Length: 123
Image (cartoon, rainbow, N blue to C red; front, side, top):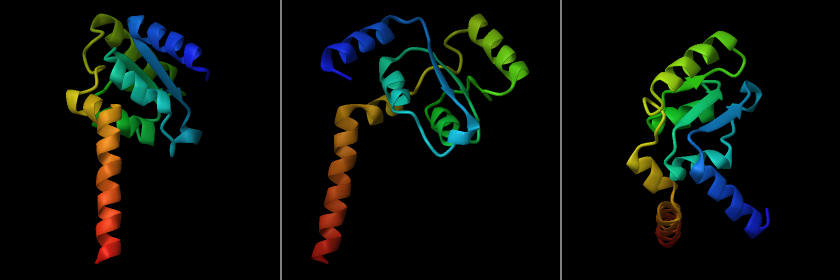
């Protein structure tokens, strides 16, 4: 995505009342990169994904419990009703998750991994 288009998309995301992540269960071993951007946006997130998949687990680890399987109309209706009644209940990522998803946090993780690799190589 060109830088201008990315900035425009980010601006729209930051103005949204809430954000939606959709992921079918056939992609359970993947987490969409936009989820981390959603965390950093500090907006309520509704996740329609397999709760047992990597995206569902990542959301739960972030403190998000507004999760419903994408293929269950009944679960989506229930989750959506709760979401509308209380948009910030179980929909916001924790501060520690947001920090870990930041560029600074990701750079810190990379530096730790590189330190570990170089320490192992020296030993």
